[in-house]
Amino acid sequence: LTAETVTKGGIMLPEKSQGKVLHATVKAVGPGSVSQDFYNWPDESFEEMDSTLAVQQYIQQNIRSDCSNIDKILEPPEGQDEGVWKYEHLRYKPALLMESVVVMLVSLLPQSDCHPDTCTQMTATEQWIFLCAAHKTPKECPAIDYTRHTLDGAACLLNSNKYFPSRVSIKESSVAKLGSVCRRIYRIFSHAYFHHRQIFDKYENETFLCHRFTRFVMKYNLMSKDNLIVPILEEEVQNTSSAGESEA
Image (cartoon, rainbow, N blue to C red; front, side, top):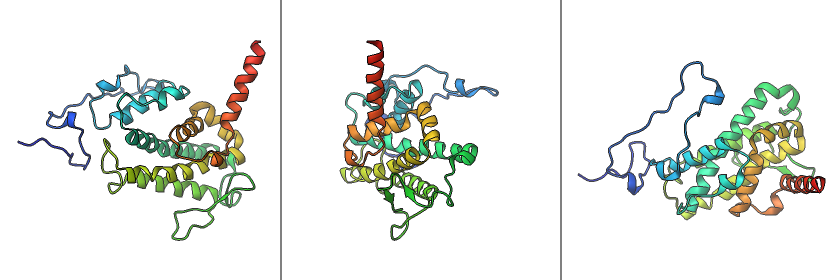
């Protein structure tokens, strides 16, 4: 018998998983559990995560453990393929962004004022107006539509079997597409920062999502520094300096 190299769903199996009896550990919470207890089980080392989804599992575990520990979250395990590491990080962020956008729309829409009548263009500062690439010819979109189109497009690309058929190895031609995804997603942060600052700060203080994304694209040269217009890292340096002066 030959070892299976691809699952029924089309996911390529790593060599260490080929030919093994399929097994899994079921982790579940009981009825009536609160959200704080949802992941109330011990952390695993990356070596213990014997799964085709180990990289994604490892990233999520580090984020749940401490979403402000950006150095740890962005540091790949020893020997990890860099293309897969970048892909899995980016694959996870549109889902987080979509969740944040949905929460803001449902619970904070009266405060946010981000709807087609008020934010008629996807803008950041007065110098930056972004065209939506979801149309046959890129054109202006209301900011909330641009956000939805961008996240839908990113999710479709990153889940495409044509460009990303494997979760354990990725072609260089596919890795090259990650930069354009990053640029478009970053525009959502830019709009939120410059036009909905109160809501941006609320979610950023809870999730550090823009911090993590900015450090991620800088670490792996996925965006030009000229395009990183949210001064979030500059503020971080200023706050650290101010704290140091106060202690002195």
